[in-house]
Image (cartoon, rainbow, N blue to C red; front, side):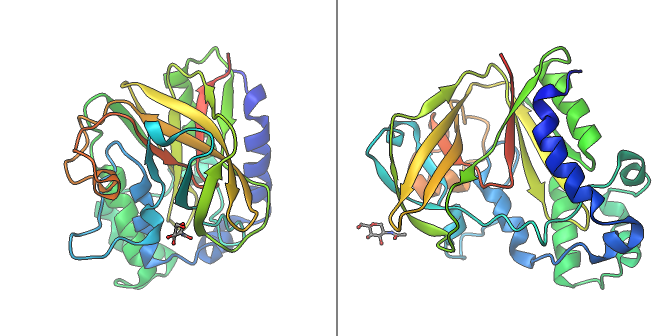
Length: 282
Ligand SMILES: *[C@@H]1O[C@H](CO)[C@@H](O)[C@H](O)[C@H]1NC(C)=O
């Protein structure tokens, strides 16, 4: 596999990994929020929404739009959650990660290992992550919860082809802002990135870095979108549009947020800055 295109990401990840060490690192790394697992809802595929019908829709679901909304001059309210590298968990080297059980049935032992008491927000977040990781992929989808960079790369090269370079696409914030939720205007015609297959990876709340990566056989379209916020913020956002949502659960949060029929094609969402999309570099 050629790693050229991944240098940037690896560098970032390795730097993050290098500034912590061993067991101490494992125990210190995380301040998990019990809310964290709700962050996962922006994604389609096998990610099931956990918002029950009684809960109000919080701002974090404001990442969806439809393909026809994606044109220059259009405005929409978008929630971009903050990337907080000071509290982001560190990546473990593969041999270390592989030596730690990663399964729901091992949760009690894992909680003892990480010194989290059962019922604590951290315990709940770990349970939610393990549960989500163990949900089988939907039809036409492959998924992995990668516990190391190496295992993420092996998974990605299996899908994108081990002979091709990858390109990493991630949302970039060009301004520092604390306004997470605001109206943005699409500043110019979005760039479509040609991608026969894509692998999307999302960070999961866990005591060390876990990436939920998945890829669907159905058609997806990838865009880079220049956004201007109401308060002057500038964002180059990565968005993916799912052209086939027929396998999604009827109660997928996107259908409710957008007020569209379950299974409607062209459901798009923006990616927060700590997630990324891998595409073949053609
Ligand atoms: C976006 O603009 C609309 C119309 O001006 C306004 O009603 C809404 O409150 C704004 N949303 C945000 C998140 O600022």
